[in-house]
Structure formats: structure tokens, C-alpha cells
Amino acid sequence: MTDQSDNKRRRVENAVPTDEQDYDSDVVEIPAPPQPSKAQRRLLTNTDHPSPRGSISPPPARKTTHQPYGSPPGSDKGNAGLLVPRSLEIPSSEENNLSSLRRLIPSPIQLSTVNGLAASSNLDEDTRDLVQVKIVHGSWKEEDANRINIQEAAKRYSNVQVITAYMAEMYGSGARFKKDILAYLNSYGQRRTGSLSAELRKYDFSSVRAALVASVPGKQNLRTIDPDQETLWGWPALRHILSSFSPKTSQAKAHIVMQCSSVASISQKWMLNFQNVLGASKSCPPLPSPKPRFSLIFPTADEIRRSVDGYACGGSIHMKTQTPAQLKQLDSLKPMLCHWAGDDRPPHPAAVRQAKRRRAGPHIKTYTRFSDEDMTTVDWSMMTSANLSKQAWGEEVNGIGEVRICSYEIGVVVWPALWDEDDGDGEADMIPVFGKDLPDDDDATCEDARQRKAGTYDDDDDDVDDETTDDEGGAEGYQESKTGSREERKIRVGLRMPYDLPL
Picture (cartoon, rainbow, N blue to C red):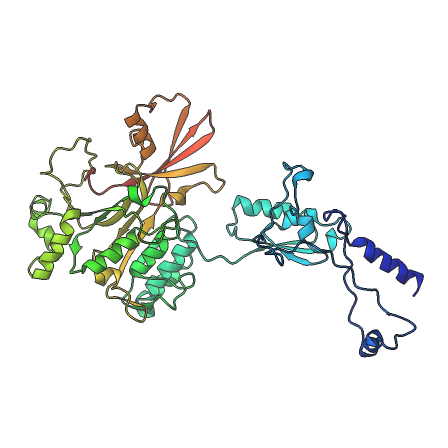
């Protein structure tokens, strides 16, 4: 062997840490050379008559012996194989085989990791620029602060490539809303709505803060459809949207109010499924779990008579009670029923918050989840054309996984997190407001209400500087309150209520 080969062998051996060496020392393992040819392999494998020239390639690097993860042979103890990262707060004498990026990252490799920038700084200085690092992240919004920070940091490294992963459009985003409303319009056919769809494609929907919930006649197979690629309809769409975010309150404290102008013939099984849909959330545990409280607002005949249009406005307001099955359905709904106008309701200990719509015919349809028993904040709210019926929302899933819908419906769902600040400086609360669009200081959150009950609420806060801003991107207005002492911003989104509270 030449002196050059001997030096290369020594360099390989010295590059591999022994059991006594620190695994995080600045060493680099030289990659193995290409595979030898057939003639060379014969020389290397002929143990009876070894070649006098010996091996023509450097010996492979010695492998470092580590304590294997799992259960060692002959032992009743083991570990799960999860590596705990090294911390600067732990002295080296107590680290006990903790890991670091430098130990975990082989070199040279092509790296794809969320912590790619941190990994780049932990690579050996001699080969750091040779390792191709790909940083894959999901911050797809151009204005996202996290995306901007990653891009700026990556500019310091010539071998780092930043990749934005494909992420399905999130519910509540303008891109998803545009996709779903175009799918809804296209369901009518090119001849009927083709020109409208073509015009809407030209518009920017980025300012939209809502999710579209629509129904289209036909069947969808829930076993084969991909909700991230195709638009769901009916109650499956609503369930998928509500499962995409977490309300701020628990199921046990929530109060879900359904308000509609028509209740079709529905079975108790269908109603239970629909209540489970309305109670869905990202954080909801599998059933059984504490159920929210449910109420159903529906007008009485006398409330229709007192409306501005009298009995004439009741032509499309239905809840049939002619057959035994319909009477049984009415009995099952009675515990949930609440008045629309409440003219004859008994006095309530809490002050009535008036929506000033008692004399309007209740043709509006809303479904709202309130956060607490005082109904002072909202977890989400939906305004739609869909009444309480199988035709509008879809039947139960059949034996082959299909849901059948009979009518066209359309609506929108909003929730407070859609107004949260991207940089984390502001968190939104959705406040029910009455006879107005914007919340004010009299519209308290559930936290304010709890403080008032406990006698700890301070109405006179000299440190608060209120700024009221109209949100042109949606139907709701919002108010930002900035507290100078804590530099926190509270965003209050007003949700204009169509009925009085309390129920």
C-alpha cells in the first residue's frame, strides 16, 4: 500500500469514536468507497490463498458499539427507544446517554427535517456546506410570520433549500371557501351557472373568514371520498368542518341552539346522529362523552299571528302533528323547544338581551354553539338555508357508506379563531350582540361574567385603550382592546343574534 493509502486508513480509523470517546466530538466518517469489481472480489474472498497484495481498498470504518434500544438479551428491563435531546440545563455528569443533533445526523446525507436550520448549525464544520438540507414546512400563507422567518434564516446557508409542503386548504380560509362555492355552483350544471363560476374564478377570496356548508342532491360515499380533495355536502361536510378546530370550552358546558322555520319527519336515530354532528370538534373524545345541552327555537301559532305579516308569513313554516309518528316526534322534541318571540315567557332572573326581531317572521335558520350557560360567548355559529330535515342535511349512512341528499342548500360557518392574529399577539372571542353589529364594553365575555359573579370584575380599567374597527372581510364586526400594562390585545368579534337571550 502507498503512503497515501496508509494515511487514508489512519484517518478513517481516527474518525470513528471509541467507547471511551464522546459521541458528540467533531468527527466525520468518510463514506465507503465504490464496490470492487468481480476480479477484485475474488481476491478479497480467497481466504485459502490470499493475494500477496492484500486488500486493494481501505477497510470499512469500525462501527461504534451503542447500547441497543429495547429489551437487552436476558434482561427483564428495556426502554421504548425514544431519544431525549440534550439540554443545557443538565450537567454533563448527569446526561446519561442523552442525544444531540450532532450525534443523530450522519454525514454526508441529504436531510429533510422540520428543524433543518438547527441541524445545519450542528453539522461538522468541515462538511457542513456539503450536506444538502431541505426544510419542509407547512406555513403556506405568503404573509405568515413563521414562513418569513424560515426563509430569512435559510438565506445564511448556501446548501439549504426551503420547500413549502402541499397542505390541503384549511376550512375557514379564502382558498377553501372559493373551492367549495365553485364546486357548489358547478353542481347546477354548466348551462345554468357556468358563466357565474367563470366570473367568480377571477376574484380573490383571501379576505374571507368562513367555511361554506352546502347540500347538493345526490349520493356521496364517505368510505371512498377524500374531503381534502373533494367537497363534502350536508351533515358530513358540517361534521368535517367542526372537527377541524377546537372550541375553547368543554362539551359539558356548551349549549347548542338550533333555530329553523321547518321541522320535517325525522327519526330519533337521525336526530341523535345530527346532534353528534353538531357536537363534533377537533378535541372531542370518542363517544360516550359529556353531551352539550341542546335547544330548538321554533315559533308558536300565536307568535306567527303577531308577526308583521300575520298568518301570511306562516305558509312555509311547518311542523306536522297529524300522524301518531309525528306526535311521537313532537313529544321527543318538547324538552328542547323554546319560543321565538317569548312574549308569554315567565320572568327571568337575568336581564333579557333583545335582538329586536320578535315581530319578524322567523324564516332565518341558524345553528349556534354557545360557550357557557350564560350564553355570553360563542364557539361557532352557522347561518344557512337548511331546515331540520333529512332532505336538507342528508340521510343516515347506508350499508355501503353512502349518504343521500335531496335538496340544494347553502350556508356559512364562522368561529372566533378565524380572527386570531397570525403572530399570536391577539386572540379572538366571539360575542353575541343584539340590535347592532359591533360589541362594546357592555358585551362581556364568559370570563367577564364569571368575574362579575365572583365580585372581582373591574369595570373601570384606566389602562385600557379601546379601538373599534369595522371588519370589511365578513358579516361580523370586531373590536380590539389593547391593555398597555400587559401589551395584550383582545379581539372581540360581534355575532348579531336573530333572537332574544336568555331563551
